[in-house]
Image (cartoon, rainbow over all chains, first blue to last red; front, side, top):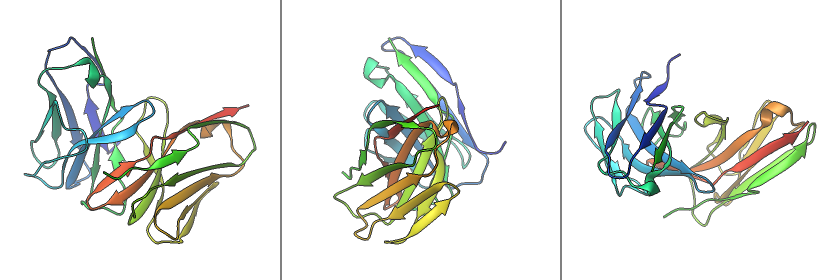
Length: 114
Length: 109
């Protein structure tokens, strides 16, 4: 099915290790987003890319970097993982930003940092 | 930054009952959205509201955009077991969405 694909679905890292979360969408959307979800805190925006070639910080960008590789792909990198980054990460996309039509979300990456 | 206060945090309901949840904010939003998240999945859009005072239905779901543009509510009528999940409100400001903390809905069958 068309939509937003995230890889991997699960990952365990040791403190200090690095990794990249991958996200791809096939809906020809211009804007892409990375959120983290923690119990009782809802979804918090880490970084977003309003269009190909641009990226901006969201609410909680510290400890993360992003790359908008092309229109389809938007990756999130943890350079030196910390236990506080244990979370479920969601990628989302939308036709434009601002959007009045909401986002389409991927199914998430569950990351544990030990 | 903008914050949304979503309540209740969680609820158990009897199958067949009606459910209400709401979101409030000190900020004005241009759009209110309601999402549902099933276990192990990403949120899925249920209803989008674009105008103050707007009342919109989607099957057993009804949502309203508050007149002040600072609040919204979601009603679910005649709940069924598959309504279980986490419901999020979201408000649009500029080119981003801000989400509430979610309402966990558990149904007693």
